[in-house]
Length: 220
Ligand code: SAH
Ligand code: DHB
Ligand code: MG
Figure: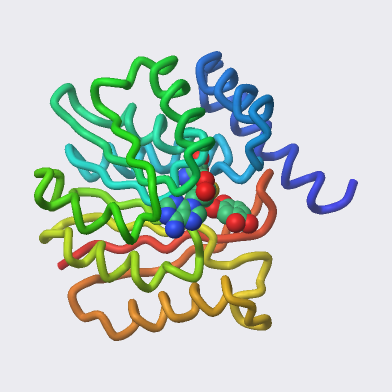
C-alpha cells in the first residue's frame, strides 16, 4: 500500500471511530458530486476539526469565505448556539444554489446565509448589514486573494477572533513553486508575519485530501 492510500485509509478509520454515522453530511457530499462540483471540500475529519475549533472559541458569529456546496459551512453552522449566525461568501451561483439546498437539508437555513458574488464585493457590505465583527473567520476561497481576505478579516475582528485559512501547504509547493495561488499564500503568510495584532501558526496536514495545511490565528 502506498503512502497516499494509507493516509486515506487512516482518515476513514478515524472517521468511522470518532464521528458517529452522519447521513446528512454524507448526502451533501453526494449532492455536490451529482451537481458536478469539484471535490475540494474539507475532509470529514477537517470539517469536524473546524466544528470543534468553533465550539472551543464559543463562536456566535462566523464568516466563511468560499462556500462551494456548503460542506464546511454546515460543520461550522452546527457549532453555533441557538442565536448564532454564519455568513458564507461564494462567487459561483451554481455552487451557491447547491449550498443553499444543502444547508436547508441540514436544517441550518435560519442560521446560515449564502451571499453570491466575488467576496471582495460582498465583504464591504457585511458591516452595514450588521454581521461584523466576527468571532470566527474561515478563509477558503481563491488563493491569490488570501492577502486581501486577511485584511478584511483583521478589519472585521475583535480581541479573541479566531482566523483559520485552508490550503496553505499545497502539496509542499508553498516553499518550492510560485504559481499565482502559491504567491497568494506566501503573501498571506508574509502579512501574518508582520501583523502584530494576530498570533498565528500553521500546521501541515495529510489524509484523504492529500498533503496540505491550515493556518490558525487568534486576534490579540
Ligand atoms: N469551504 C468549502 C470549499 C471551498 S472551495 C468546503 O470546505 O466545503 C473554494 C470556493 O471558493 C469555490 O466554490 C469557488 O467558487 C469559491 N471562490 C473562488 N473565487 C471566489 C471569489 N473571488 N469570491 C468568493 N468565492 C470564490
Ligand atoms: C482548491 C481549493 C481548495 O479550497 C481546496 O481545499 C483544494 C483545492 C483549488 O482551488 O484547487
Ligand atoms: Mg480549501
